Picture 1 (cartoon, rainbow, N blue to C red):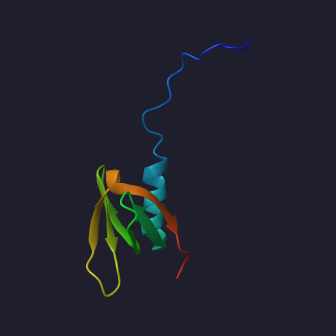
Picture 2 (spheres, helix red, strand yellow):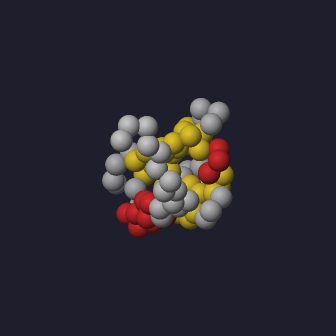
Amino acid sequence: MAGKVSKTKAPDQTLEEVQYLKHLIDERIPIRVRLTGNEEVEGIVEFYDARFIRITREDQPNLFLFKHDIKYLYELGTR
């Protein structure tokens, strides 16, 4: 039926983000994060919670990044 609207609501959370962040931490996968202001930082995710992630960087201070300030992140590859 064309034009029929589903009344099923999408889940608020799928837990995919939690699983992915745990994977990044466990495997110590280097990532690059692009922030909403287009700044970029690289490092390894060491910790996360509902509002932020902690990025550990070599020879630079560690960072706490609020999730709402993150545009996207991607893996740089394994070490």
